Image 1: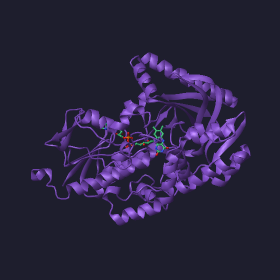
Image 2 (image 1 turned 60 degrees about the vertical axis):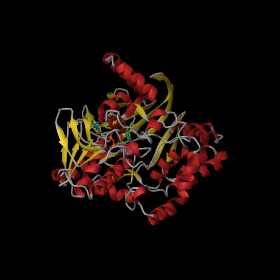
Image 3 (image 1 turned 180 degrees about the horizontal axis):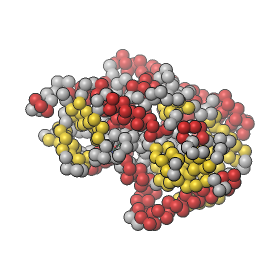
Image 4 (image 1 turned 30 degrees about the horizontal axis):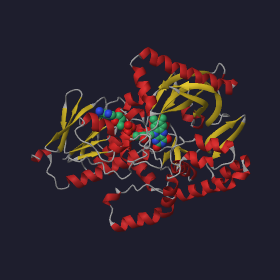
Length: 500
Ligand SMILES: Cc1cc2nc3c(=O)[nH]c(=O)nc-3n(C[C@H](O)[C@H](O)[C@H](O)COP(=O)(O)OP(=O)(O)OC[C@H]3O[C@@H](n4cnc5c(N)ncnc54)[C@H](O)[C@@H]3O)c2cc1C
């Protein structure tokens, strides 16, 4: 039986493992951590659960192709899908404005803030409605499609695709400037960084507004564990605490992997589903370049990446009256050289299974740039200073949250703090980024990377980095596509035991 070796047990690696088993291969997933799931994770602290990932999962609507795929890999087995009422809510001096996930309610809400902005509000909603028709092709990679399949796809996507193209050339900042109301300007500038294409915001919002961006109850880690169970049930071999140090290449062909423990495993086809930069720089020893990814790494201004500081708190008692996604203006505070004037909070009261021991987890995010990652990385050399800075930021956030919600006094407690370095250390995430290259008007990031690296046969990259802007669906799809490409490659090839 031909053996497929998969490096990385995140969502992409596990998807590859599942489809490898379904295709009749022997497979092994090698994951460096003790828990599978990669960035799709959560962890317990002080009797509470901190969900580290899913804010929305694209593909939760039953009549979509992506939903079928999530079901095939076991991610949504017997699980309730939660649909939230609003995307974000914003506090302006006590008035809370909701960015509702219902177009009519959103329109009414934004018009109540600024009737004179009707034209721009309607433009935003009309564009989102068009863009919602876009569905990621999941059955096979575009380069494996025939002419008729491509034409059908083109027809289906035409109107949404044209809107995407138009708004990918306009930044969130520029779109926001069209509003007369300073409140609407501020809201539209704060959902995503100002230099991102507004099409990204429209795509995310329209996914949720069309009911295709729900949240599986129980959170991210539970979803990852369901996929791991599906893989094992299909006969897959999940090896945890197994860090790969090298992909072994012989005569231009990937023939196995070497683990940090010194063990070598031979295989017929190797899929590297860990961070693409780790694969290129460490596992392939920097000997191969990729013409599609390199320009993105070299120009992070136009191909921005996303990381953050995350502080998690627990609050005792009922907090269901607090908006679960909330941004409020605050006294200024510093985070790694940038001045912040607001606090964003996520209150996990919407998922009752995550409210533990009468306590609800609240997380607060502060976005961090690649330069800030570098600063965190330098600070990490001095562990005491690094930990002090983490605690200082958590304290600044907790003070502001308690000032805004005085009823939390005596009930709120710090659970944990994560920095961009945490994402790098835990998953090898490039500069701590847990998404791939985001879209700006001048970005060169690709969605149709075939995962091949020039000069290496029987090898595939998979994972979010080869399908910008990344996220869970991109991890899933690339994981599946990697096996389809492996099948094409292995169809006629003799296996190792036949002396290949
Ligand atoms: C705070 C946060 C919020 C997010 N919110 C959302 C959201 O709402 N919706 C959404 O769709 N996405 C979201 N994401 C993004 C999502 O988590 C990622 O896009 C996705 O999990 C990436 O999956 P992956 O398999 O491509 O990569 P990874 O998850 O990075 O998996 C790679 C795996 O490879 C392992 N690995 C690395 N090096 C080695 C090695 N040498 N040997 C063996 N194993 C190795 C890593 O430990 C990891 O398990 C969020 C992420 C974070 C952190």
